[in-house]
Amino acid sequence: MNRRLLLLLFLLVFGSATNVGAIDTVSDWEDPGQRELYEQLIHEVRCLVCQNQVIADSNAPLAADLRREIREMVLAGKTESEIEDFLLERYGDFVLYRPRFKPETALLWLAPGLLLLAGGIVLWRTLRRRAVLPIGSDDDEPMNESS
Amino acid sequence: MLRFSFPILAFVALLGVFLIGLQRDPTYVPSPLIGKPAPVFNLPLLSDETRSLGTADIQGKIYALNVWATWCPGCRQEHQALMDIAARTDIPIYGLNWKDDPDAARRWLVQLGDPYAATVMDLDGRVAIDWGVYGAPETFLIDAEGIVLHKHIAPITMEIWTTDFVPKIIAARASRP
Image (cartoon, rainbow over all chains, first blue to last red; front, side):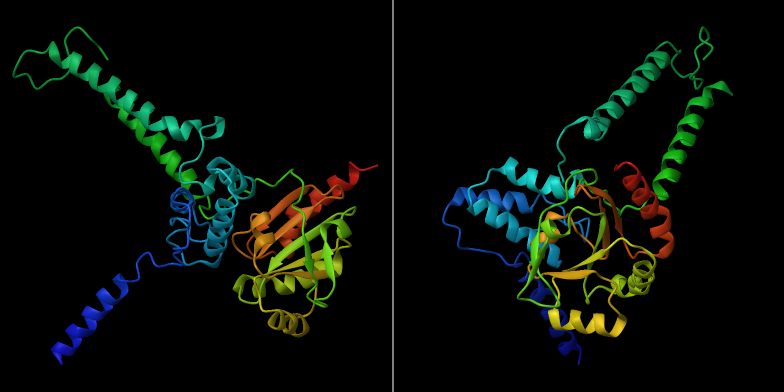
């Protein structure tokens, strides 16, 4: 009984693992450059049905349709930016996991740097204030400052 | 007391950000098509597959385009509302039957009623991609010049039609001599 259960578990785990990445994988690319572009694009385009997946990983019918569209555009010799334009015109900035840098997305792109800068300023000010305290003091407020 | 003011202010600001964020629908993706010309299509009619209907045939008058399918639960949910809207408005509602089985779609319209001026079939989903469709049901409003005025994602109701669509229809008619 236990052995059967183990076998079942084994099959469940490894039986499904073999299917990973097998969503309509195409192997008939003649041009390796085109294959690379296709693979790169489907790993950067968001599936809008299941929003936290790229279309390469999604089983949604819309994701399959978008893979087909991208495949055909790549085969037709379209460039990366032309294909991205096609998607942006239809679905907006959200469709790309790495949205283009423009006024609407500037805050999104710059926020990590701005936050790091703000944190750095706070750290620098705190350290400078503490540097004037006598060693062993547990009061972090210096005598000559009132902030 | 003053030395705590910065952390407290930061906390309150963060709370505000979260409160606003929690009230927004993360599944809603605004359409980049609003204010732009509606994507062109020419597709076979559901009622007669040998004939086709395209944007060229229906332009020149304000119309609504409803994306639906028999596999879409939200479409069944909104169907009665579409029937009611179609009975009250003089705006033609066209149906875009998205990646559906034509026989099932025809049966659906017989059983539940047909609110559409006409329904076209998008069997391979290409036109839906052109329109940026990602989740049926979706309803578009297009003006007489062929510009997309509005897009509603999720089942439509009479209330949504009255508050979101009707004012835009009135404004579009008023701006046209």
